[in-house]
Length: 118
Image (cartoon, rainbow, N blue to C red; front, top):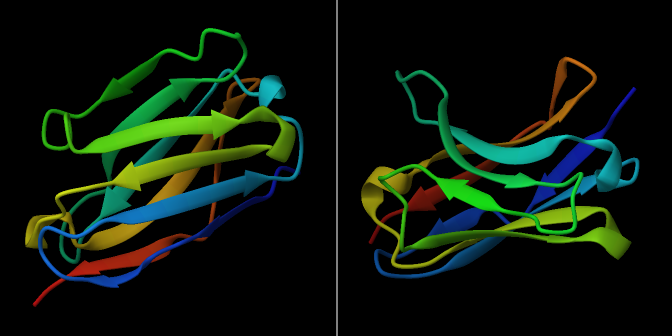
């Protein structure tokens, strides 16, 4: 059983920044990749960013809506993946979920709320 624990959400003004963390219960090298998704009220869950974790290269990919504003990164020693969110907009308001893909299975965290409002 894989456990993923997210933290770092909160209330921030438009234009502000937040950093989300996702800590796994096992080495992130055992996952093919990890990702962040988000779900706003009344909307389907949408993909935000992915980072490869099985390789040392750790290549990344982003949704167009966050490209240039969000950065996904990892700390292998801490079994943690981060999402640095800058220039936040009200439309970024959502519950953010961490995802880890391993052996054909998607594993999810409990989510952390991000609210962007003045």
